[in-house]
Image (tube, rainbow, N blue to C red; front, side, top):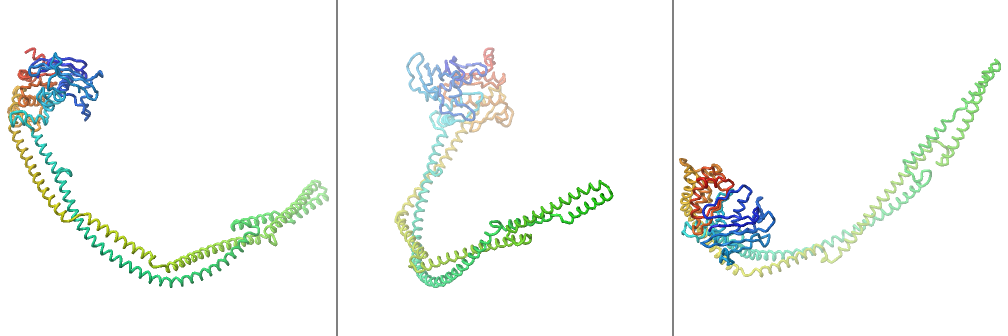
Length: 632
């Protein structure tokens, strides 16, 4: 197949066109100009866009990553030459969720459809390889130059090794089929062996359950006999205890009635005393007051009376004023001293005022005393009598409270005795009941009925379990089938092991040839500096330089040498595993970017040789490749 012309509305490519020719095509363009987008476009035109892809690890799916920047629909056209015929492939978008789903393939310049080319398998028909092999071999991106050992690539390599054609199955496919058969026989709980083992366990459980049920029935029968005996014993015990209880209750009732009578009499006396004492607290000057308040008021009134009495001055002091005044007047008169005579007049006035004050205070004390005698109902207004009156009131209050508390205490005792009397009377009535109504006997009867019910249910379970002989026959059949499946499982395990050994042997046969050819290409790419390659089953390659005793893994190589190593392996796979008849183009996206100028020249020379048999499309961000090819 040769790609001749492309038109694309794809990612950053807006109605862009590109023409190619046979042999080696070198397309030089700056970064971000669409080189990788053209590579992705070729793959999309051949294999379509996977609309089921989802974003993973921050990597956008192709349907999002390559959506046209202008917002237009994703579409493209590619003119190719295939088996000597020119064909035009077209892909357009009808639904945004399924970009480039609409596919057509016609012979160029006509409207005639190409038979056998459908959108789903066009790439495999044209290139002779499925998408996985295409991406692992001829589709070489600088960021993904390492080889991934896909199932499709493995299938192609193994088929060529074993039969020389390309129709065989891969080891992975055969291994998957055998392992699927293995899982059908034993896979967690869903395999045939676990299922039949579960059935065997169920049948064994049923057999054991039947035996257990028979044993339980025997125990229930024994329990029923014991329950009936316990019921009869309970009835006899109830009759005997009823007779004993009635005798004791009669005496208890008489004692309680006597106690109640005595308490009722004591309660009446206490209630009368409490009423009498209560009446005392409702009379007199302290009516309705607390004992403490009564004493405080009486004390305050007594102290106030004493203060009033202390304010009344004595008559002696008044007459002293009188004597002094007379003496002053006489002295002044006889001595003819007017000043002294004048002084005697204020002294006489002090005498008159003193007599008035004494008289007023005496009236005040007399009136206050009269009020106290009337209020406190005492013979004389004496503090001792007033305070004694208050203390007597306080004593009456306390006595009334004590009498009230005594009434309540007697009432509580009386209610307790009456309650005990009612309970004793009820017990006496129940003691006269039929023994069949006794709670103990009722429980014994309930136990008997319960055991009878359990026994009947167990009989039903035994009948539902089926014949033990039939279950035994079923168990033998299941065990025989399980043994057969186990034999098949062991045979499959052996087949998988044998298949893996055969695959390892085939890998050992193919690996030297692939390593030899890749080593030759590596020598060409490095000017003979690296002459040998080796690789693992996963196609992780190592390189050995001339004169070295051991090969070096990729981690120990420079970035450029690592790219050369994997490019050599890629090109060797293309030569050995891909049919020359299909001659699929090799697409290289900046694959030489890490090559120095010398090795870039070696690579271009080798690619020119390969381009004689298949088209090669090399995208580069440098113009050195073009200059090298022009200036040779």
